Every structure is written in structure tokens, then in C-alpha cells.
Image 1 (cartoon, helix red, strand yellow):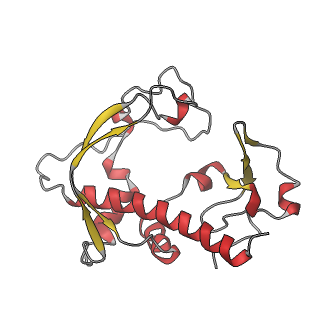
Image 2: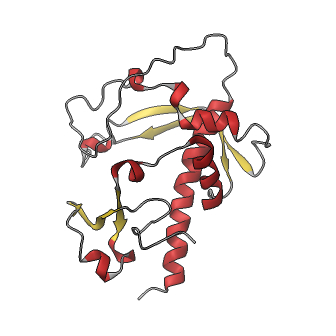
Length: 198
């Protein structure tokens, strides 16, 4: 059996790394916008929060559903980070072309296809993962709600769960049964309401 400290560290590191990448990419991308002369309307398309995805219109352009005025990452970039040196403790990733995706996706709804060449501009990324404290500041500054908070659940690696929690779980990922759907699991309660990040 793995050492509990090792499991907790691994969990924290994975969560922090994913959060760091998302926040950094969005913040840095927004920071390079220099032309504010063409302000877009604040009218936005609708959005539905559901874990159910259909394949019929999955690859359609969703640009109409995006509204910068209501984007929490845009709000965070313009409020919480203006006073800090954005490039402190960051490294530059050079621009380049890379292959992304597959022509044989296992789950079409995951959006992993088709295989294509993508050019990515250079960007900066944090040297270290985002801490829970920094993510908490981001949440406080933007009122951001994670998907787990919107849906009321999250999928958690079953090996991290106590037996009493696993006994009440009724849903798992079909091709990855070690991912178990835990009610009220979120970034502050990674294995459900009886757990925390402290």
C-alpha cells in the first residue's frame, strides 16, 4: 500500500500542474492583446452545463457562445494580476508547429480528433504548478466556478478513496473504471466532502 503522504503529494502536484497550465495560458494570451479600439459587444450566446455530449455538432465553431466580458480569466487578468510582474518565475516556450489529435479517437466527445498540424505562438508558462493559495485568489477575484462545482461532482481515482466513499459510488467511466464519480468532489474537496486540501 502506498504511503498516504506520497498519494497526497501526487494528487496535489497533478491538480496544481493542470491548474497552472490553464491559468497561465489564458492569462498570458490575454496579456498580449494590445488593440482595445474594437470593443466587442457584451451580448453573449447561451451555455448549458452538462456532462452529456452529442457527436452531431461537437466540432462546430462555438465562437458565438464566447463572451470576453463574462470570461473569469479575462476578469482575473485585468484585476488580480496587473500589479504583479507577470513574467516572474516563468519560462518562455518557443513558437512552433506540432501535431495534435488523432484520426482514430476512442471517445469522439473528448475532442481529440482529427489529427492536424497546429502552429502555436510563443508563450510563457510558470516554472512551478499553481498553489492552492494562488488558485483560491483567482477564484476569489473572479468568482470562478470549476466544472466540478457546476456539475456537483467530479471523477476521482478510485485508489485514493476510502472504502466507505467507494461503497456509495454508482458511476464509473466505462473504459476507465478506476475513475469514479464522487458527489461534491471539487478542487477544495478532492475526494468528496470529507476531504480537503489542507
